[in-house]
Length: 283
Image (cartoon, rainbow, N blue to C red):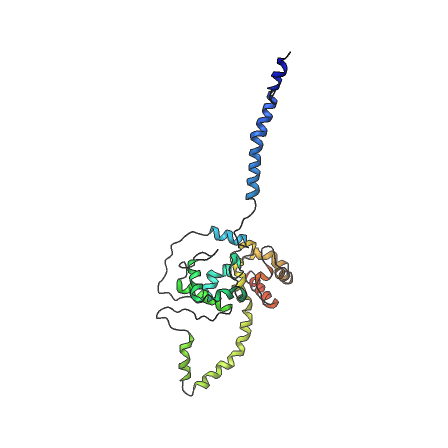
């Protein structure tokens, strides 16, 4: 009689094969499914680094080629600062992506301008923060410096555009020639004065293109973040069908990944001209 309680005291929770299967299931199978669920949850959303406000842009930057081999003409004319900005810098500086100081934003550029041109160019060539080293590639060091000067001066800087050795200086050296011209110079200036009013309408017609090149090109040139690609009739057709007023109203408030007015500070008329420019290119 005294042995029966002793045997029951050493009896575990697994008393039959059914109990054994349940123990195996809850000890091994359930944890595996829990781990798989956690992995799915963590990897289901896009992750961005500090300062990155545009997931699509950051993804494109991560997927770009590590390196490339390019043959260039060493004697080709050097590009101006504006061309360098549009070709390379606008991708981030047009909208302020990845913490880049936004183009024409005097407040963002102010502390940087105080560092001087040499420090700004060094940061552009060596890389800083989320910006990779910009030297080499399509542009050489002088062209990169010109791009920096172009952006800095647009935000209130007063830097002179760097010149290559032996390269002619811009219009400053040509001024003495006109000053020492003979008495016929006033006669030659008259046609220029008469032609000036005719050039004004043409400049107004370029407002849309200028704003596109400055701001909209960042996403619309490649169709990034779902933006209708420039000149792509198929991608623009649904938007054009809504009518110009609807497109302007939605773009002014911001659509999906695009901030209000594409992140620009343009007037309503100029912003509408930029949309019209892209619509005309897709017709």
